[in-house]
Every structure is written in structure tokens, then in C-alpha cells.
Length: 180
Length: 82
Image 1: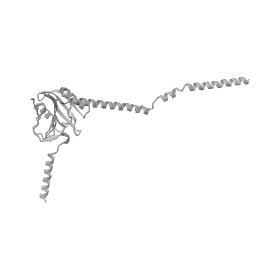
Image 2: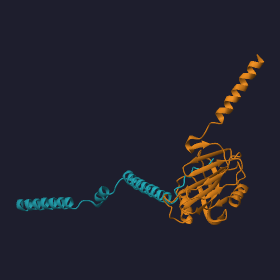
Image 3: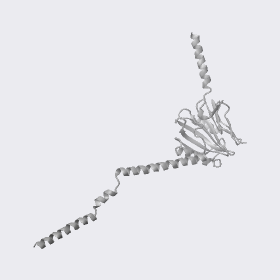
Image 4: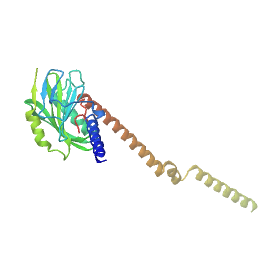
């Protein structure tokens, strides 16, 4: 009798583990197995994010995101030469991005400033915004131009859950960019 | 004597008729003022309609400004959030 109950529990645990590994967020594109955090842009640049062993990697067109075990999300969004705003300077793009929040598209406050990111001239964009569930999300990152592509590299975490400043420093200093 | 009494009566009738006609020709100022002034409720409704139109215009302008900014920075703000 005891063996039967134990077997059922073991089976239930196995089913739970197997099903848990297959879940994904339907609103966030397809989920693919974790892989090294390297992103390639259409223009041929390679971005290597300083995140080891991401637990999840999602790709949706020209955007990718990696989730680390602590819950932080590292993302890259690329505007290629065909995108609207492709001809704008990174400062104009950063101003417009912050303006969207300021105008109330979603709740939050983002600011931008000229900076150096991964050895490239960039516009650092920092602040907070409402997340998918309406919770407050801290966001750090930068917009930079890589060849013909405009790229927003960002790190985000629910406020108060992750010490984001050391991660943001790591993102700015240890992200590697290789231009073709 | 009778003729004098008749004359006095005629004069009195003419005077009373003239006075009545003069009053009808000049309406009271207070009547005119009351007719031209809208009621407080009507004034409130009008002001509410003006405010509503202004709000709608502001919202529309805000949507246009957001769309314009989105054209320059067409990133997905939800992407990359937990």
C-alpha cells in the first residue's frame, strides 16, 4: 500500500516536472532551449551579453530575451534599415522612447543620457516602467548604432527582487560587440 | 355746466388712455433681463460640454504624439520585462 502511494507521488512529480519544462508565455513569442547569450543582428554585428547559463531564451523576429535564474530579463531589440526611425540618430530614438512613457503610453519614467556602452557611443536609458502585470519594473540599458542597425540592449527586473545595479554595471562593461 | 362736466370727462379719458399706451410701449427693464439670462443648469451643461470637447481634443493630440514617437522609436516596451 505504502509503495503504491509512493509510486503515484513519484509519477505525479515526474509529470509536473515534464509539463513545467514545456510551458511558455504565449504573448512573448516562441520559447527555445537556453543557449549562450549571443545575438546576431541583420547587419552582421554580434552581441554577447554577460549572462551565464540563462534559464530561458526567447526569440521573436528581431528581438531576443534571456531570463536568468534570479528573474532578471536581458533583452535585445533591433531596428534594421527597413524599420521606421532607421534614419534617426540614437539620441532622437532615445528621446522618442522616453517621450512615449512621458506621454502616458504606459506608466513609468525613463531618462536618457549620452554614454559609452560596450565600448560604443550610446544613449543610456534608465528608469522604471509598468510590467506585463502592471507591477513596477526597473529597467537599465542603452541604445546604440551597430552598422545600419539601431539596437536597444536592456536589463529589467521587478523592483525590489534583484540587485539590479551590479548587473547593470556588468551589462555596460562586459557586453561584447563585434562589428562585421 | 353740463358741457363743462362732459369736457372734463373727455379730458380724463384721454389722459388715462395715453398713460396706458405709454406703459405698453416701454416694457419693464427687469422683464427684459430675466428673459435673456440662461439658467444655472443650462450654463453648467454648456460648460461641461466645452470641457468634454477639450478633453477629447487633448486625448486625440496625445494619441497622435505617442504614434509619432513610436514611429521614431518603434521598440516593444513590454519585450524584455519579467
